[in-house]
Image (cartoon, rainbow, N blue to C red; front, side, top):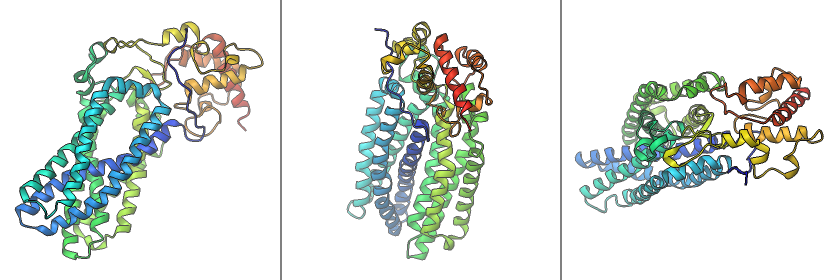
Length: 449
């Protein structure tokens, strides 16, 4: 058989699969990072409460912990499978690549997650029911397990951008896939964010306290914790920029929506102001204001960064070898993986895609435009709007309104087919396929208005 391992394409003309994945991931990241930061904060606060004989501090731990059971562990357990579902539909080859490389790492992460879930229940319900040493030990085990889950997941996420070492392509294995500078740069930035989001979420709970003195003390501690996290994010952001590949830098600087950077900077600035205000004037804070701050951080700060992270690894979706359109672009001897581009170049995408209707495998005058549309959806829709002239990075934006098929074909030949754009996949279409794609794009331009 001439087939290559491609799957039906999830195409959403309104948002695109990448935006859906990023939206679900954004919500999940808030839930999951709040639990990690809270685990660290709890370990410190419980230890302080017992050392200084301050049982009132345990009141906050119990209330915040009960809030987290719903906020992080119930909602996080819903959005977590949501990420699995959306990424499996949107990028089946990408998920396959991660599972084949990291199945035991994910299994390890799930073990730590079970410890984390059991730990948060024990932490909450054992307040006042066990001795101080045991309760403190539970707090530190909970914090360690929670941080371990984030560390393992970030190792996998950093691999999606760039394997830890170039030797991974030849040798495979965890050591070469995980332990690169990008892993640790991301880990430190995420640690800072976990601390900051914990302070914001925690202030929703603490600002509702009736005891003015306890409210003031806890809010100030949360504000200091959040400020420290904000400083960590800022400092290690610059290291992170030096750990990403050249194509990622190009996308980051030139190909993201213009409002992303101002939104992120504004969100970060508002968050710092929020913490400073809380630190010196806790009386103005209430659950409504704290909840508004959470929404601002989530949708002005985190959402653009998740979209950017999804986009920066282009043209790849995993490990610098699986293209975003699901075609394997290079050999990976260490994993016994073989490139699929040579077969596409030899046979053409219409002959090797197993899920195309048979009447599209041969191009005729009657089906040329529809075949071109199918090629655009299969090859380009992971990153572009391909059926309208507005939306997310529409292909027509790169054609300047041209309706001349020959001109569009020459442009595609010199860019996409030749692979001369570092952040786009190389698509070695056969001449007839290229002609069909050019004809479709010309027709799309012609009917733009």
